[in-house]
Image (cartoon, rainbow, N blue to C red):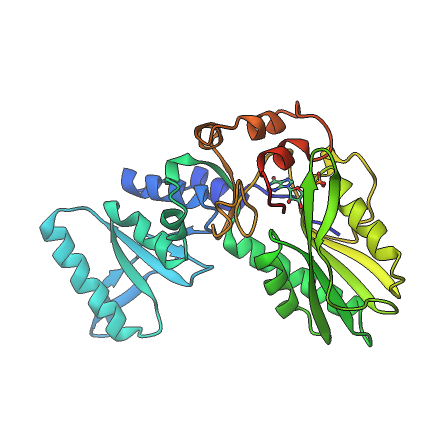
Length: 330
Ligand code: IMP
């Protein structure tokens, strides 16, 4: 089972249908689409004041972000407008204390992002304009991880399992997946070293003996399949009771050796991605989303090889990245 990366169709279709009252709103909608944050335009009107049983004042916030359960009202810098809106927002909060609403100036869009953990863009010293495309938002990832956890829990009903994560790209996915699985489980890690001349080898082996155990190997991304093939051959020799694979991401079109991946989070196009544990030269693992970076980011690192990989011109065997990440792997 897998899920293709879907365009944020609902928002984009909505955007085409919506007639925005103000260009700033259209800009904000495009900004939300870029980060794949779901939104609705003016979905709800709140009565604020009544006279003789009739509503005489009401307020319709510009946006609702369902994933965050948050209404957003945009405002310009015009002071008279700001004061009026502040008053309405205050009144709304008094009357509807469970409604979350924020008043945003145009220059404060980033404030919304930081609320959702996007502040890490600063931490990784990446400018938002260096992101080519966000492929998967934090909530899309979380939804899918929850589905995978449910499916795995059902499939392993009545059994316990050993999750084996391949360091380091697996860091966040394994942590989230393990908590979404409702079966008893142990966690162990493998780390590989990759050397151009000596090939792939185990740098850090498992602590646990997996003989007779149900092992679920958890990988961040399967590309050519060569890494996974090596790991599976190694683990099979230890005679586990069963051995299955769960990969968050699958670049199926780059496969060189067939590998049995039972659980796939998302099938990706052939592009180099970072974030949610995946790195480029050890950077960008802590981005909360999975994205494609602009070519200039790699070029400024003095290495154009990733860009080549995007075009599918790199040689075989996960090569370009293996060469570029000097000592580390994964
Ligand atoms: P494979 O042996 O070609 O399947 O490569 C798998 C390994 O390459 C993964 O475990 C990752 O460490 C790395 N890798 C492949 N594609 C990407 C990517 O798009 N971003 C980050 N790492 C990647």
